[in-house]
Image 1 (cartoon, rainbow, N blue to C red):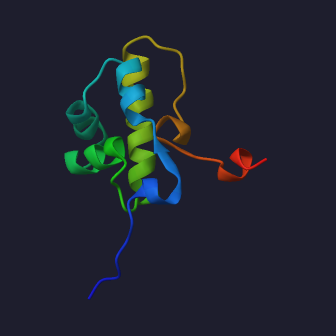
Image 2 (image 1 turned 120 degrees about the vertical axis):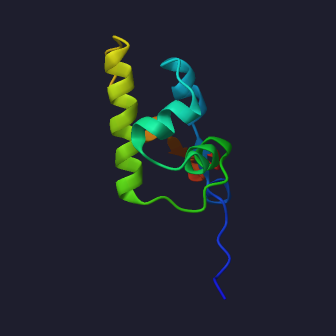
Length: 94
């Protein structure tokens, strides 16, 4: 039996991929195709329901975001925080 894993939001990760997709005017499916990852992976990241992500998959998503952005003439370089952020819970308690 597999151990239960919680979605990323339970660990304080905040999904930011939806806003990134809007910034570069592309769809979840287009990103999945460009990154060669399952559409379900993109949907889970957008919704905050991802339970894990492989570094190779994350890299492919970031490379695809940057490629799409460059093809559309944008100059921004996308990084991990454009997929998700870690909420600083300690900052809130100060």
